[in-house]
Image (cartoon, rainbow, N blue to C red; front, top):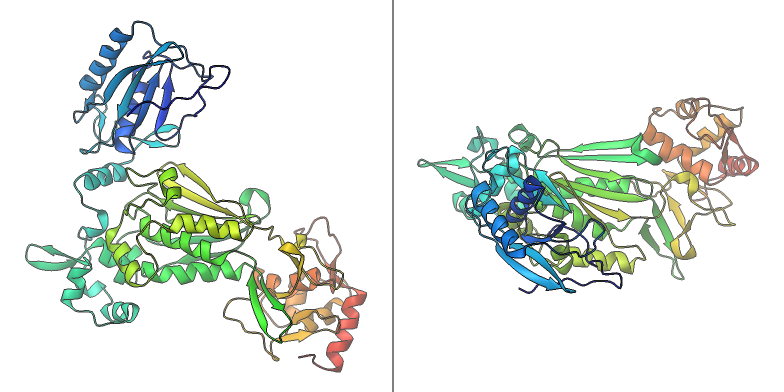
Length: 512
């Protein structure tokens, strides 16, 4: 394949370094050169271009034939298993470059002989060469032989550790030995059936008992620096059931709006893009590595972004560019098969392109893809969800993007609007059933959030503050005594004139 190397007007290379391209001035840094070759062979292949300065200026190499032979011998003498990249001399802008085209190796893991298999294996993460941990080394070995972690027997797990009744309910059909074998949920071990890793992930009520990182950690961070955690959840159990649990957590921390058009019909509008986020959650659950990578899948809801981070990074041969184009490669075919039967994935690689298109249609930017050490993070940018920064319209209602006037409530997905759970003031402001008691307590003088919640007869916990006090503040019924320091320990709340009017209306009658 000819080298694609475009130069700008100043003679600098246009294409930057990345997962499949690295530039070197010369071969003086032998170890770094060899680490790059090894990393390319273990990841997605790539091109090592020698004769380019750090500022991307093409200068070429001296004694090209000698350097070509030198690089060939370096690779042959220092890398195991044997690797034979195509090493060519290429002329660009009158300069001779040394180019080593390294394919994705078929005998992974490749490593530096001097450091050994578990000390000298490297992989490519963005434009960096990183040393692989033991779990990644083992996974590279499995993938090169066409085997995957989820097809292997799971440690000490026994057949009675699988909940076959629950699995049948999940699949919507009878589960027998044939089903288990077809789905590769079991492994034949010397004439007896034992659960595979995939079987434990799909059918065990507690897969984390056998695979410690087979769970999802969720958190809602408020403010900069991810220092203020206002909500969190640990999602355990069969991996397919984690999809709805994670989505419930995200919806719990989003805003649900009621949009009323010409017809007397309520239309729920969520403040986050649910369908693209669900696709990314499914993608993480199916393609993460459940071997020992140190941490579980992570889902973080920040004020202006939601990111999903999965252990294991991209599978060998895959790049972010390929993902964007819709190419697909499964790390866990057992999980993928079950998710496909549940109509959660198609296995055609359309997921990421559809996510990008859906976000674009919603007026949001493309997600960010970031590879770190044995992890992949995908970030979706959202409107600012700091409750104190939601702009209010002239009628006291929050203004959604595109200037739509809506009525909205902060509700968990399982909570329904009813006459017993919501009050509506004369100004059209929605208040939870505990709102009148909170307003009444605040009308007696400045009170802390704890005092207000206790006066309403509910626990003084963050979730109740978000659901019952913050909406009153944002609707102008309550005011903070220190609005510039909303999280101050000395913060107190007082009822406003608008709040007093609402309190009178609540005392007279219910508006719903």
